[in-house]
Image (cartoon, rainbow, N blue to C red; front, side):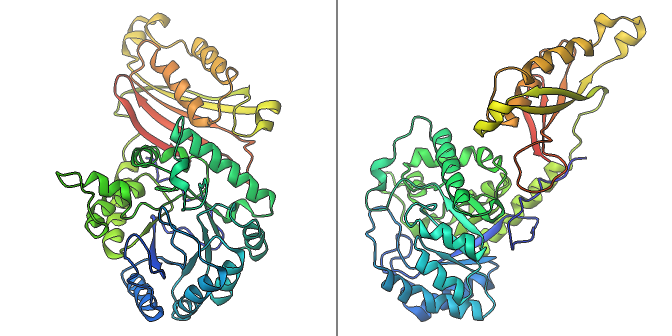
Length: 422
């Protein structure tokens, strides 16, 4: 039996066994979602307490609107809006995150009790913010960003949105690491709706595994956003208003949670927590399935081959060993009855073909190597299904570890069966 994907380590946040729900409190007069409903300090505090009571694991307090077209406010005004709300919620035992692009605001919020910094600029708006995060040691949400809200939609041009966002997000990650932020402090956010058009948002959501495969927790903020309004538009083409996008948001939450993200940033607590619970149970049931439908097995384990796969340049230049295990689902009866090698899998020849893949063309992801190995196995006569595990024992992880491995299960003619990181 397989088990659910382990939750990536995040400093100060023990594993929950499910996706976290981050509730939103916008202390702004111009939020796209609530139009200033919680601009008043007392109303903002009350909203945060309500979200916590509904089951939100974190309450994200922001004082500066980042809706498309929004103009910046000065730091004094941002502090005036958020500091009393953070202080009151933290004093009441609520886990608070601060949604800001400014080091000064983040510092004041952490001093008032915030436990996480959520920076939609991913360290680019204020170079002092990553430096503060490094010094304070607090967890840090780093979002894909191409510029401020006033004109960010002009930058929504991509050759391949998933590949481009992944590459740019990794560059932002490397930049904050260079400023002293530790890897175990960082949560990655692909930035749904930020310098993205609706079709970009859907492509990113459909391929969240590209981001969860990076080995850091992933946060998705899709709640009530424009791409849902467009999906739900009236017959005359009028987009559905934000308050009418709640159930669609719940659906995205369930799908994102089922895809294995660390957290979802949402405007409502109870319904989204219910969606997370459904997704969690779904994942548990899927993970409990047997890896194979039954039948005979041929296993080739511990095939050690030198390769040059990896995201980082040094991995391409220096290379490292990879270890491959394959378990083939076959019918061995005909070969056994005839005692004839031609009626079964020649594992010596298969080992040669697998080794050629690992030693061949470099790729970024172990997942890609595993997929190519599975294709080789399934192209072998008599193989009905295969489990491929690729181990990367010298992976660039900044902590002591035993192994990094990716396991995939594929069936001939049936496409993907499951996809498990270990």
